[in-house]
Image (cartoon, rainbow, N blue to C red; front, side, top):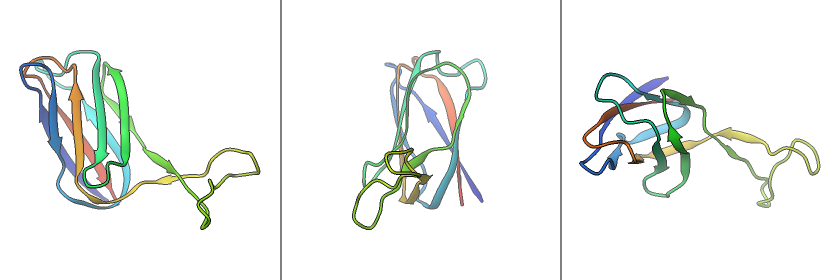
Length: 122
């Protein structure tokens, strides 16, 4: 497993856009670390997507504390239908594969604040 740390600093309006290095593998987890006196203000919003394709990885609003997410995506049959555990049942989810940079966009983070995202990929 590989860990990529992406520090992100907001601008004077509390917004930021940052990019991870190019990743290759399946995303195991993403950890937002709120640390120190200059951390994002409570209520920060995250949108993390694959840069080239725009595939959603993690979107969450009004985050107040450090958080860990294990993003998963729905799977499909060869015919393009949703794969379900039973007819009409719960969707089958799997880790998200990427060969891309992740684009991290923040809003409402507070002026000139810092934070970090740790991305685990295997």
